[in-house]
Amino acid sequence: MAVDPNEDDTTERRTVQATYRAASGDLVKVEWDRLLVDEVASGQPVREFRWYRGRQHYSGWYAASTTGGLVAYESRLELARILLADFDPGVVGIAAQPFQMSGWDGVRQRRHVPDLFLVHADGLVTVVDVKAPWRMKDPKVIAQFGWTRSVCSRRGWAYETWSGVEPAVLENVRFLAGFRRRHLLEESLIEAVLETARGQRSIGGVEAALAPSFPAEAVRPVVLHLLWSGALVADLRRPLGGMTGIRVAA
Image 1 (cartoon, rainbow, N blue to C red):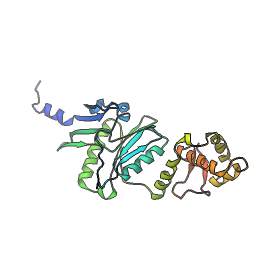
Image 2 (spheres, one colour):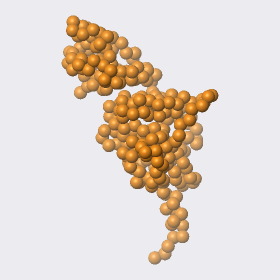
Image 3 (tube, rainbow, N blue to C red):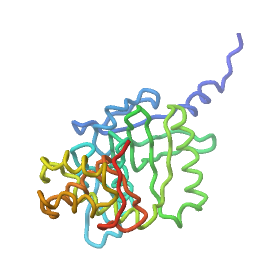
Image 4 (cartoon, helix red, strand yellow):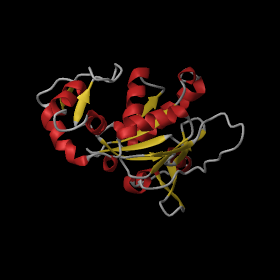
């Protein structure tokens, strides 16, 4: 049988490598198909984060309720997407700068570190790249996105490019994040609030119904925590307040 002299080169050009930083801090390089979801989700950012005077981007660490650990971000826009992921009850894992992927796109060799790696309760994985809206039409960015999407599809992973959400939604989620820590609340009120919410239509209605037994300053943080956790649902496109309509999640 004839051997194609270009076969090795073709195979090399189809191969994608992934480099990630394990929880131990060690760098690990594997073929794309051998990249383990659990190890990436529990690992550290593959890039080192640096802070210095005059830096244009705002970097930091976010304490995620989903993972119970810290998630790094390199900009306020990335932080916004992390907040939304932490708010999503269907997300069970969040990793930032999860790996570097490298390989050929058919024309040139590419290297890329996606911004986020999200693991969902149903087993789905979503790889996310965050970019400012004005960069979304940059031909170089579009080409990078196209290659990344193609590589992710080989694993059956979803790929998302994200540039923002409605300001009111983000502000509400940012506000609710202040109530994400359950242990700081009066946990004994949770069942009473949920039961009362089945017969009331607003935050203020729940507070009024419970007023004979519990002060509003104890009830409202519990309501807001339950909105964060997804046990209660509200329209977050409008500012939150006493008149905000709520319902118990199905």
